[in-house]
Image (tube, rainbow, N blue to C red):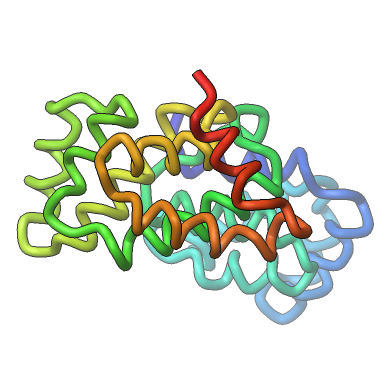
Length: 206
């Protein structure tokens, strides 16, 4: 199945009737009245938008605007992931919202502080040399992009089992203790005062 069509189908199943009505209203002026009246599902609406080329797999700006307008940030995030990676991870295979927030903060710190030793870190996280070589080949002139893409690969590979404590442990195993300390400090406000010692206990657990 075409990945973009699969994404639209997924969106369709996640829309409430009220949200669908809101989307139809927002499309007023873009789609004829008769066609809008025939829309009974998100799939119907997306089919018309595709037919009129208001949305395509390479131009999702109109679709993103619609989703933002109905305040479905979860679907906006999945759409952005599709644009960046060409695929979307099933929500059932993703970490919970809090864990994702922690990982995002940790990755920002790692991105800013880990340099040419990033491959050592990714080996500690379990990524294969083949994957690392592909990342370098795809981004040969940007060390920072290599770091970001490698961490995204790790997140995709681990899915819901990805843990920020694994990132901290891998940093320490790679002798990047200063970066690990910075990650822990960054995460403290997000954990309602969870102590650094608690993080270290979790990241050192076997």
